[in-house]
Image (tube, rainbow, N blue to C red; front, side, top):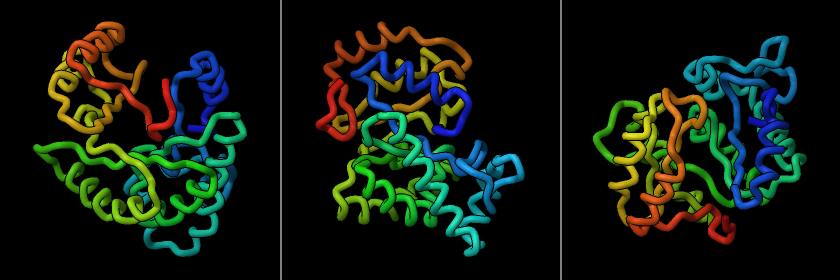
Length: 218
């Protein structure tokens, strides 16, 4: 989230871990914008509610120029940190919103980003996961045509904000063949994680850790 107060600290931490892939978490709700615009209040705050933001972006054509500028501004700020263009997604998965996806994908491609998150969590599905499945399915043909990479599935949607060591271990133990993404929020979940034990578990199961795009190693 390139406009947040801790962005510079996060970049400094990333530089101490050169094998770590860092991506852009495009923020168009519940965060700070690159500049004050029609999208924001007078202090540069974007709408808190993703539903409200999504409805505005879908039904207010006058916001399109400001939305396009904001998306480009966040990609450019990411690159200004000296980090390589790799992967992007969106805060609260708003990057899959049809308007944002339509505007954001060309900007991402122009700047060398070749991977994205599709939010396709295995069943059982909730209403929210069903919506994201539909949005992901709608985006997939365009991504395939453009050679953009994405994982076969994600885990973590149902556990957002409540991931635990036990749940994470269960997810790892059940990872199917193919490319899976597990996401959660280190430091903001209800408990800390024993990462060495998780890495050992992955190794014991023969799970290969990879990064997107695949030419990036770490």
